[in-house]
Image (cartoon, rainbow, N blue to C red; front, side):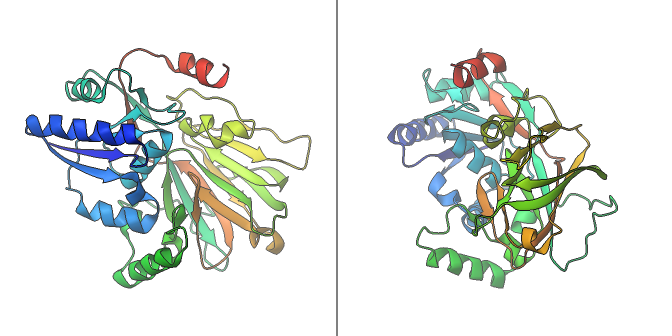
Length: 330
C-alpha cells in the first residue's frame, strides 16, 4: 500500500498535520510520500513529481483547501485514485472538516468507513487554427491513457526553461499545448474567455452536433457538477448535485438578454467554435484556472465527461445541500 500526502506548504496547520500523518503511517508500516503543493503549480512541475510516484497509489490525502484538492486531482489525472481532502484552507467546500484531526479521518478512509463520491471529470479537446478537426463529424478519438506525460525530452526541457524564466516560476501556466498536446483534464471547468486585448469575443455554442446559440461576450464556462459551485456559480450558473454526470455551460457576461445556462446530458459534447478571425485570435483558454498556452490561435473546443472520474472521500455526516446552504446561502 502507498499513500500520497499533498500539503499546502504555506499553511502551518497543514504542514503540522502532514508530519503527524506521516508519523502515524510510518508507525503502521504503510509506505507514503509527501508532496508540497508548491511542487504542482504547473504542468512541468507535475510531470517531475508524477515520474517519481509508484505505479500504484492507493490513497491521496490533500491537506489544504479546495485548491490543494484541484492540484492533487491534476497530478493524478486519468488515474482512479481515491482522494481524501481535509480542510486547512478558507472555503474547503470539497474537503472534510479538520476539527476531528487528520489521523482519525485517514484511519476511517483506510477502514472503508468513508463515503466515495465518484465525481464526473472533464475531458477537453482543442483544435487550433490550420489543424484538421478530427472531431467535426463526431469522430471523438479514444481517451488517451496519460496525455499529460506525452512530451518528449526536448520539449520538456524547453518548458522547464520557460517556467524558470517566468518571474512567477510559471505557476498557473500549462505549456503542454506548445508540445502538441490537445487533450486536457479538469475537475471543475474549462473557460473560453476574451484574451489580452480585452475585447469581447464572438463564438458559437453547440451540443452534440446541434447548433444552440451564436453569442458575443466575455466567453463561456463549461463545468462539471463539481465545478458548478466554482467559476460557473460566480457567472450565474446553477448549483448541481455532485452525483450528476452531465455538464453545465454558462455564458460569461453575454451581450444579449437571451443567454441562458444549459445543463447537458451525461453523454453530450459541448462544442465552442471561434470561427471569426478576430474572435479566435483573441480567445484564451483556462482549465481549472490554469492558462493553456498554444503556438496558434484556438479554433474549436470540445468538452465532454471524461471516462475516468475523480473519487472524493467523505467522512461523517454533512449532506451536500446542508453544506451548500451553509457556504453559499449563509
